[in-house]
Image 1 (tube, rainbow, N blue to C red):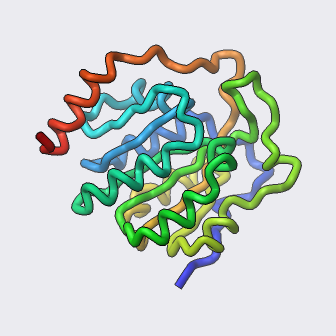
Image 2 (cartoon, rainbow, N blue to C red):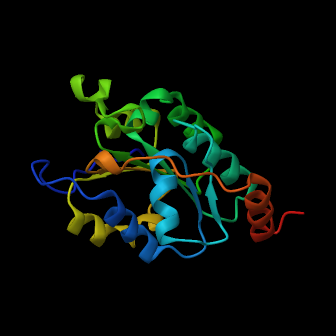
Length: 204
């Protein structure tokens, strides 16, 4: 049965710094595949050079959940964590239904919600004006585990038990904008990255 969304703390708290919120997951991560695109692809490599990091660097706004789903279906013995921005999630809401319909239980989608399209200059997303309820959408799509964390302390307390919840899982983190420092990272040669990732998966 689908669980109701859970607000970790009062939404008036300051938003979490993106890098700090990612550090929380880095500290509890074991051998899960981690998929990053856009802003998360800039910050996550500062914290992790794990062979199971799948850093997709072309302009891939909204693609992360479906990349994660493909990997989850191809590697059912592994857990997959896919980071998506709130703007990217708005561009691919149908992916929520596709994930549940696929039957994949080993996928966690984490939406990093800063309320902005930072890649194009910091415009507010339509989700802000519409008071978009991402967790409500995930519940309606049929995700068995749905949660939202507004404060760093409650996110830190919950992260270690995240993968113990039934999958697929949906998490919304209330993140502070990066601001003037926002940029997409320079891509490394994709052939090298894919070769290393396939080797870590044991795929020839």
